[in-house]
Amino acid sequence: MQVNLVSQPQYESLVELLCELHAHYNEGSSVPPEMMRSHLVDN
Image (cartoon, rainbow, N blue to C red; front, side):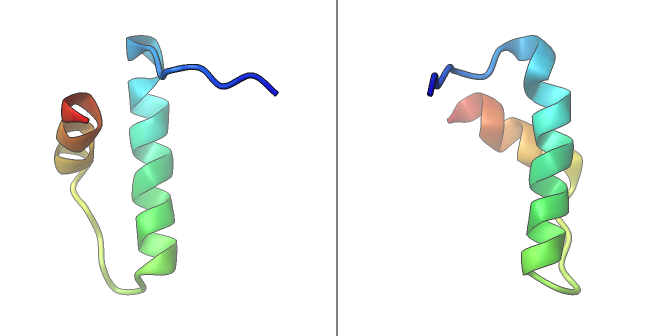
């Protein structure tokens, strides 16, 4: 198995995936993509 850091071209796909995961596991809750993107970039 190979694990790599997320590259900038992959951010949008990952942001979308993380927003969908959040919505799935936290029914009735959503996270704005901008907030998720900011968290991803900052961390």
